[in-house]
Image 1 (cartoon, helix red, strand yellow):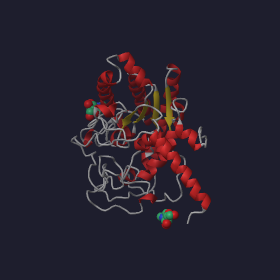
Image 2: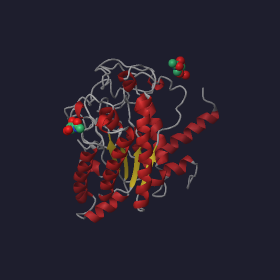
Image 3: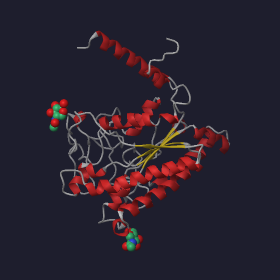
Amino acid sequence: MATKSQASIFMVFTATLLVAINGDPQVPCYFIFGDSLMDNGNNNHLHTNAKVNYEPYGIDFPDGPTGRFSNGRNVADVIAQLLGFESFIQPFATARSDDIVKGVNYASGGAGIREESGQHLGERISFDNQIKNHRITILRLIFLVGRGSLVATKKYLHKCMYTVGMGNNDYINNYFAPEYYNTSSLYSPEEFALLLVEQYSQQLQALYAYGARKFGIFAAGYSGCTPGMMAIYGMNSCVDSVNSAIILFNTHLNTILNELNTKYPDAKFIYIDAPLQYPTDLNVTDKPCCEVESIDGKGNCSPDHIPCSNRQNYVFWDSFHPTERVSVIDGTQAYTTLSPLYASEAISSLVDNEEGHFSNA
Ligand SMILES: *[C@@H]1O[C@H](CO)[C@@H](O)[C@H](O)[C@H]1NC(C)=O
Ligand SMILES: *[C@@H]1O[C@H](CO)[C@@H](O)[C@H](O)[C@H]1NC(C)=O
């Protein structure tokens, strides 16, 4: 039972949420680039194994299965909510004119920095093609927000949040899938990390040229600890060789983001790391909540099987993707990390209210 003070804390918290929901978002628009960790339906119409618009995916999501690789929201959804958007950022595949003014989600399951990454899974929208899709959006925005002027449109884009999370498939579905790809015989982990990061840097600069200024770039996840990778390697603990290759990538990524910050003083590139610690009751770390079809490189939930009921205790929803609870924790930390991109501007109502500064209370 709640005590009196707990009840009043709850009321203040509720009031804070209402203010945040009714106010304008902290940035006018949010563009999302990434892979299955961010995809919210772009793969639904593609010929690919990296497609999950069926039950039990979305079991905790209001609209059911949408193509999100989760039981509920993904990290981008959580960031959009915390930024104050009233609805989720729509997928490029189905976004309408009204939607794209607030941003677009281009993310695609199986996609990588490199064009070939994930190709054995089927069709996917590589980062290069996500950038091409962004160009299509900009051509539409010229008439929706720019009154026919590209300069005015770019001014609008300067204010938008951009998050990018790529690299996971360049490891899981390329470098560490030697039966389909020869990168691991051509390059050492160090060489491959440098090659990837160099290409990534060019791609981010292409977005800059299109008008992006506020960047949040996610570190690659430690996929050596996913149930999928552990099964492929026949291990019941994290696969160190996979994680150490990814640490090289993240280290070089951090370096190039610093270089980009120096090169482009009118932009900000923020590196988003994963939280160091999760709550102790998030204690099932080595197996997925749903029943998976097969472990050989895919690991999607079997259609229509009933998943675990104690989802709040599970880190992994399927063999490679986190539960909504993990995404809420990661997304909340990412939102805080990104604060230099929004806090200096607009009303920042959420931040102010969290600190208890009600201006006309
Ligand atoms: C590596 O694989 C690619 C495509 O699968 C192929 O075009 C290329 O020739 C291969 N390179 C080597 C050195 O085997
Ligand atoms: C995980 O935490 C929950 C809640 O604290 C507890 O009931 C459960 O027994 C724990 N499970 C494991 C495997 O430690």
